[in-house]
Length: 80
Image (tube, rainbow, N blue to C red; front, side):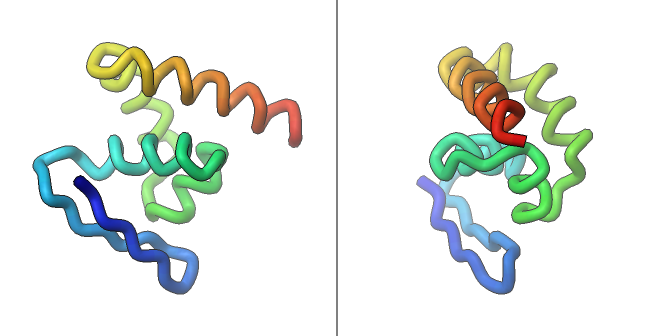
């Protein structure tokens, strides 16, 4: 379980498990329909890191999150 707190356009979070911050960023992106750019700014993580981790780790670890994120990214690209 993860607890999020948003203050001054940055996310601070505490985890009750050992998941990596990148996984939380991806889950947050899906939950709140954010683009990679928005999530990167919010979590203070480089966009390239989100892309790299998504492609290398998320597809292997969690297919459902991967599919949801691909769908979300397509939506965001159409809006831009």
